[in-house]
Image (cartoon, rainbow, N blue to C red; front, side, top):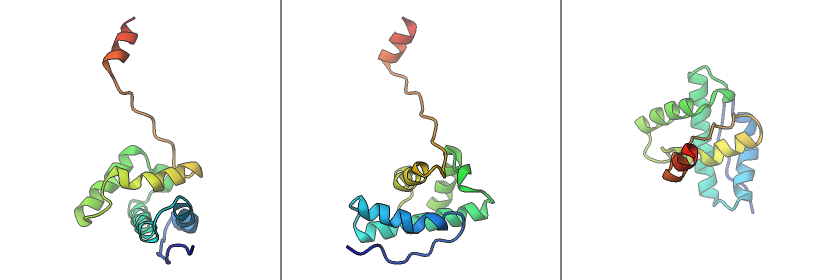
Length: 115
């Protein structure tokens, strides 16, 4: 199977673009979906340059700021869910910090905490 067509990624994420494309294809993504993900990566990389940030600065708050900027001009791949493959890949490489997991409070959790 051939890889995704060349999607130009410039900026701080350019180094990881070919590996990310191969990773997506290896995960069973259709070529068109892999290309869409690479275009999302290209946009995030451009945004990092505009914000004078490095990938290590992609905290949950920074990701939300990017998504707000993306929603202003794009109609597809505008949610946090759209970034899961990319951020997961970059986290596996140690490029992007692992997010702190939110504490989900449930009735059982409160009961156990009170105990």
